[in-house]
Image (cartoon, rainbow, N blue to C red; front, side, top):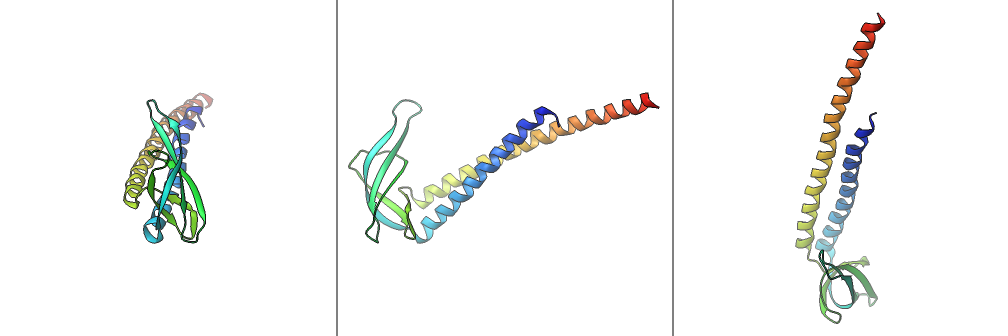
Length: 149
């Protein structure tokens, strides 16, 4: 196989790996929407970088219905001490978010589109380049057959 065929395969493979993560996100979103329980949490810490591109994360502490205190981190904005609405899985209170299920579904849809594009581009380039490689191999075989007879 020609070495330049590896790159589109890696791109398509990356798209497939991203798709696996997106399917997990779909499952989590479904769980939050179905059996999620709301609680009030407090932002206990913030981290991130203030400049462009601005990335920030918040650390949120909340008390689950079973009385256990939980802490989780996710991207978001807020000041230390602010209260936020937390949605968590009562069967696994460690799985929590401050995002609404609707927001998570929209972002999951966007990720699915990105996955599809990456897989199609990588696969398409592989098919086009692979076809060219096969054509070259066949031409070389014909030339070898003619010169050998």
